[in-house]
Structures are given as structure tokens and as C-alpha cells.
Image (cartoon, rainbow, N blue to C red; front, side):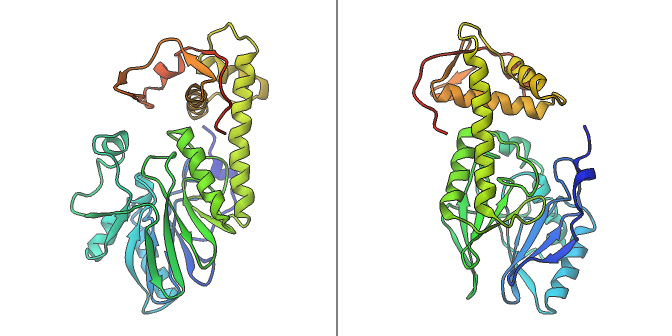
Length: 322
């Protein structure tokens, strides 16, 4: 897989982004983390809330400490708020707690026994208590800094964004990035989350990876339009032979041949999730259903091979939710 970092402009490891926002890089660059995980110190006074805590690189906490000193000799972290369960956003907590184990940590709850719980939170330090976030929760950092929790599932079920009311800006975590598009676990929830952000009309976005997005509304619309276009391409291909049973692997292969480029697992996974959404919309039907427990389809997205070879056929239906 080509390293996307080769095409990205470097970001400073520490930067003031506004009167009340500073970015501290997690020092973990990579194909999926871009220049590294962005962590943010937020607050206009000495009290700062830390949004996300990096992946756990040993250099991160010394950088965080130095950054606080550069802001003010009296600056301190009062709370840590996590956007979601992926380790590159909470891995630095161990080193933070080794210095100060009194700082409360907040995160939206995962469902016990869920994929997020078993595969992403299994290594979360058991000695660090997590205070639950809830949609609409308010953090009054100081008289000039108010954060509002916006539950935006889709990338993961527990994903949250944070609206900075005084700036009309948004910390988007991995819902929207500074470069490229994102992976998601549930396309319907992901689209709904983007629309929740759009309804707040944020002026700029502070993403979990990549540079600040200066035109927040344009970027949100760009993300929505990308998903609309991808759904249109898939549906148009399926409709080209309405008697054929299509697999996501066939769809992805055909679309990639038309456009060129490598056929990667992440791309095929996205195709499969689009097809699942089309099924939810009544546009297609699966010929051999996945395992069902009650009304809940059990779809283990890590078992990509099984899903890619399931067959769907076009049916007349109501319009798409997109």
C-alpha cells in the first residue's frame, strides 16, 4: 500500500489554531493516521480540556507538557474527552495517568460485547475509569469556551464530535478528516451523523487527522456528495443487468476497472457497506441472508470475504434515504 504521507504537507508538532484551541500531534504518522493523530488543548484560560490523547508514542506526553508550558506556565489539563474507541485516540492515556491519575476521562459508551468493545477497547487500561458522554452534553471549560457533545456514529458506534459554540467550529474526530475520506462501519448512521454536523453549520473543522478545514460547510457537503455519487455508481451498475445477482466483489472490481487504480480491502469494504444500505432502502435484496438474531442482522465486518461474495439483486423500491 503506498504511503499517503509522501503526498501530505507536514504539520507542526504544536500549533495555536485560535484564541482557545491548540493542536498537539500524536507523533504517530502512518497511512491511516496521516501526519498523526491530532489532539487538542481547548480553553481560553489556564484550564484546558484535552480532546483525544494520541496513540501512546513515548514522545507524546513530553510534547504535551512542553506545549502546556508554552501556552502558559499555569496551564493544566482538567479533563480528557475521547472522540471514539480506536487506540490511536486514547493510547497516550497510560503515560498521562502515570503523571496525574486524577484527570477524569470521558467517552461515549460502547455496547458491552460489541465489536468495538471486544476489538478496540480490550486493551484500554482497566485502572482508568471512563465517565460516560451523552449526546448534547455541555462542557463549560471557562466563560469563553463551551463544548457540546454531538453523537456521530458511523465510523464507530461510539463516535462523538464536539461543537465549540463560541467559534461555531467542530472537532470532528474521524467523522471528517483534513485529507481524503474515512472508513465507516455503518453507512446509514454515518450519513445521518454528517447531516447532524451540517445542521449546526460549523464555520471550520478541527479533524482527528490532517490540517484544519477552513470551510466547514463545504467539506461536509463534499463528503455527502461523495457518498451520493458512490451510491449512484453502484446502483447504476446493478440496474445495468436487473436479472443478474451482483456481489460487492464484482461491483467493486467493475467500478475500479472503469476508473483505474488498485483494488484494496478498504475500498471493497466500503462497496459492501453501500450495498447493505441499498438493501436497507429497499433497492436491492440479498439472495442468501446473513445470520439473524431477532430483528438484528449480525454482520461481522472483519469477515470481509464472506460479505464480498454474498449476492444481491435489484428490486423496485422506494427512494434512497440519501
